[in-house]
Length: 312
Image (cartoon, rainbow, N blue to C red; front, side, top):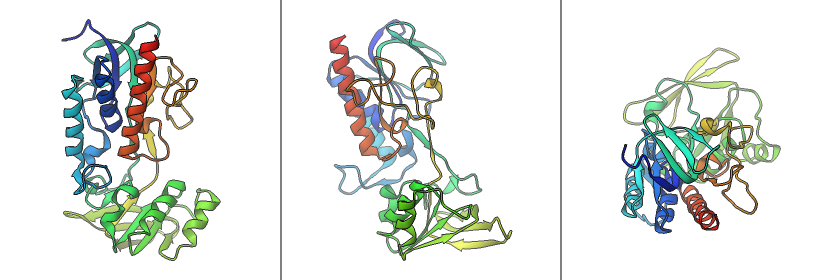
């Protein structure tokens, strides 16, 4: 493979907003940079339709188009883009050895920007209607449901927050929860139960999402009574969790109990438990999960990486 024997200054693993932003900064900082983008590149924005909350696009922009622009900008500054997935990192040697299915690259530093995957409902029709009425991000998509009826699936703090955001736009919000009590904090539960726009369906599970070009209704089963009903709805927000894409790093880099990489190393915002390895984006971010915050973290990780390279 071309560049097989080259020692890169920075290897960026991942190609969403955090990884591509990091590449823009490292290359402009005169560090040779390779982006190991994965066979499926671009992150969750590749599954998104109109993005209205990314600065600089007053008319909005399609998610895949935004990622193409970020990729082109990184490549403009001579980042090397390789559409392969990383299988392992060898930290026992310096420079690090980063392996894919077909190559091994040497790099002085690494930025992990592998993101996180939404945990979607395992019900017929759900995945087919993602971006067509089904979403996992109310701060991103709530404005598209102004004066419409929407539902949120989940029972934790994330679901409560999604429902609260949606009440600013939707005419009615229904929380669908499979149990008879929420696991969310008391403060978040109070916020939801005191809001007249929010209704709750207890002991209920979505068994099918129905719609042709867009979501039209849900089929909901009551797991106590066994009754099934059709539930006409304009939008469904899934808030049952995210899984960080950190499995290949878990034996070498410290993560929390959910698999999010723990960012720490002295006073560095994006350092990790391994010196010379930095992290950015949703693989470390449990709270915000926005394209713009991921891009900001990519900038921070890149600048900290450049400083570390200069010092070392």
